[in-house]
Amino acid sequence: MTAIANSSAATSNRTQPTSLPQIGPAGSNADRSAAPTPQSSAATADTVQLSDRAKAILDKANADKAATANLTLSFDEMLQQRTDALTTKLTDAFKKMNVNLDDAVRLQVDKFGKVTAEGPWKEKIEKFFEDNPDLAKELKAIAGLNALKAANAALELYNKEKGSGGPGSKQQQSAWTTYNIRSMNIQTLSGVISLKDGDLRSAALDYIDSIADPTGAKAGPDLVQQQREIANRLA
Image (cartoon, rainbow, N blue to C red; front, side, top):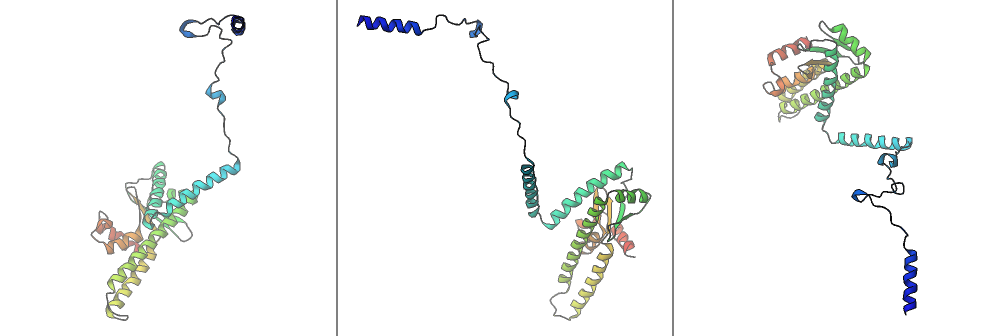
């Protein structure tokens, strides 16, 4: 038993290191060359490069997400969103051209998308839209959507004004005549847009609002002036 114990002890002594590393202050290893140096996070960070196909898939997913979000908007919300965006672009552009926005900037866009203006900045504004056909196209689209909204309001007025009389009744005939006159006026004003006080307004929509809600919020701050301007447009 003694021999075995001594042999085990001797074996144990042979497996132990002959010397211990010197420990410096604060428990640091004095032999720093033996200690592994940690690699910086910047050196070990991997940069992921997306393939062209992956980028295309990601772009399409983002576009689909945006399109789906717009599906939840009502017609009025969608129109207001587009109108606000165009108003901001035109306001910024006109300020850079030193166009006085204290007065209303009157614009008219025809069926071909050509924009004409009135007043002392006529040439400057018309040249701007010639140089920016995308904004002229958006102005035409917004004018058309406002005219569509006005036409729908005119139809709602007709349904109210025709009353409960049967087809051919005097009340229905009168309402039908009035509806046709309003529809023609809306068509005449469909391309007329004004920019004033940071608000892009459709003359067609102002016209039908002045009839449907003459004293309400849609009538604007100066109903008499608004009606006079509309009458001048229709003259």
